[in-house]
Image (tube, rainbow, N blue to C red; front, side, top):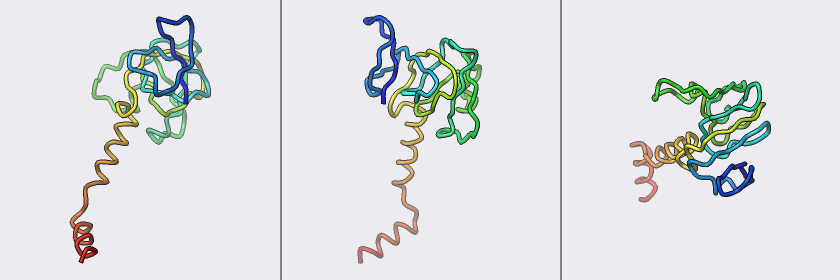
Amino acid sequence: ERGKVVRGDKSGVQKVRAKEIVPGDIVEVSVGDKIPADIRLIKIYSTTIRIDQSILTGESVSVIKHTDPIPDPRAVNQDKKNILFSGTNVAAGKARGIVIGTGLNTAIGKIRTEMSETEEIKTPLQQKLDEFGEQ
């Protein structure tokens, strides 16, 4: 997986491995790209940018994004129209944004962490079955 990054030490856009992208990097995305990190939109080059974020939200249609601030800091992911989420795909358009989260510090990474934590908690029935199985 690669992302298109604009860094001050190089001229233009360079492709780097998604693992090498860090918060603060400027990333460019266009139709067909998989979003490599959580990104706050700063500029849209096309008329609109549409993102397929069904992997994250379950929405069946692509979502139009914009650069306007979101007034509520506690907004749910579906209402964060100025954020491109890691793992989602660009359905249409071209844009640029600043990386705000990578790896486990992304929306999808946080869900993964929560899922793995809940798997470790055993119900009383599971505990009894484990005890029974050890006898």
